[in-house]
Amino acid sequence: MTTKEVANKFVNLCKEGKYDQAYGMYADNAVSEEMPGVPNNVTKGKANILNDFQQWSESIEEMHGGSVGEPMVAGNHFVVPMSMDATFKDDRGRQKMDELCVYQVENGQIIRATYHYELPDMGQGM
Image 1 (cartoon, rainbow, N blue to C red):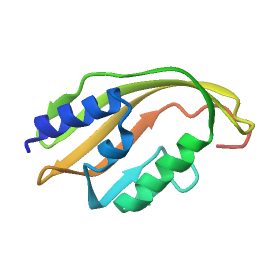
Image 2 (image 1 turned 90 degrees about the vertical axis):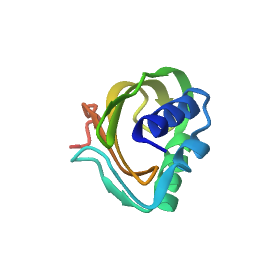
Image 3 (image 1 turned 30 degrees about the vertical axis):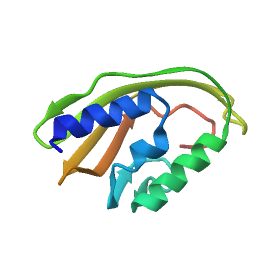
Image 4 (image 1 turned 120 degrees about the horizontal axis):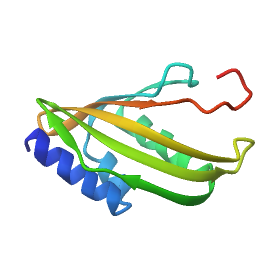
């Protein structure tokens, strides 16, 4: 698949809420990188990335809204704007977040994902 095909399929799966299938598009040796300052901000390996996503989704008490935008492709990268409005089970409470998700594609698979957003002030020195 071309980068554009990967981007379109990935975005469509996310819009349909099929995140397990979207993460299935990652290479086994993929790397996911959150913003600096986030604990354990680099995750290596598709299984670990999927596990982190599952832990994150289980930490949500209620999802109030969110969006997945259209991908923009440049070479072997694509970027997708996403937003979220959720209440977490822990002391984070309700948070709204906008982010840019940048993906690198190689041989029809996502090999790197980086997430760009403003860290919320959680009173924990993040």
